[in-house]
Length: 330
Length: 118
Image (cartoon, rainbow over all chains, first blue to last red; front, side, top):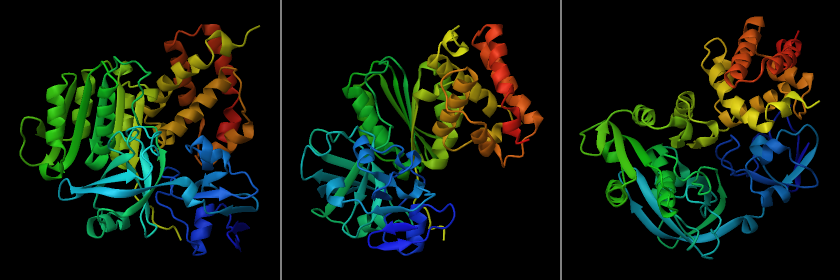
């Protein structure tokens, strides 16, 4: 039996806390259903969540009984409640909305408390909750630690509730709640600063990579930094001027764009981003190279395996696979 | 007497072995599908646990866990021997002395019935 708020719901054999609550029409937010996005956080009441359900959560959340409902398959009676949003979230206001191309919106949110995002490494992700209660994870594309001003690149998706709201209804001054940060795809300065960095992203996978590149340069990374951005056409690229300028002012940084179709120019070629990245990798000392992969999950998982098989150490591969919202399974 | 685990370098030996071993099994079409998990982190963690156990290091290994993990995979001696072969060549590649390889392969062989659920 699963206790939730004032009710009690029978758990089917092997069912997750999240699926059980959804099956009983309980209002639990969720997104990836894969134990990654942390949208479906619940708080245990007088019981201990299993380790799998707390994997990747901040220590403070773990010690206060928080767990991901989608990864919790109870084998005995448990009781959970929705987490206290006020305690978990940082409130902010939209201070920037700018379309970067036909399908990508740049959203800038200023936290009301400018120190509230001091622990968010550039490249990690935050969960954004709008006034309708829709919650989605997005990577932070800048360094928001000092001023609490976080930039996100959000793609319009066909069925996307959040992106639909963002492109059609959101306006400057709107309130957003931010939860997090989460994710382990970011630059670490205490590693070997001579290591080559190879960063490969498709679509808005550029967002965390843009943050990581800037962070690495700011922290004085010594080795070469190679960024590959893949997109379907030149029209779906963005930040080309910014990245060209960055390459012009930092000799160790290079940028190339790969498009499936359309005209090529100096730093944009027609081709496959994964193939291009593997060609770049072949010229680097693979055992020393750190690789960052961001964007749609199929692309990231496939390329992760390929770079690993070519000799990149597993500890040197950092991934941020963007997981689409799961459909309800029953 | 120090355990094989300590003699070959402890956790560092596991870290060195896991990538080489994982690359070998992923590159073997006979068994790669069993290891080609979307979640490479979890797969790597499982293999580290296995290698630590096989090296005689601290572990929470139970034969029952091994049975449950492999229950629905319809594995045969062909698969078991392939993985064992990759473990052996990983150790050889890392220049582990033959006497230690023999001990480790003996521990690995002892998991045979649990892995194949016989």
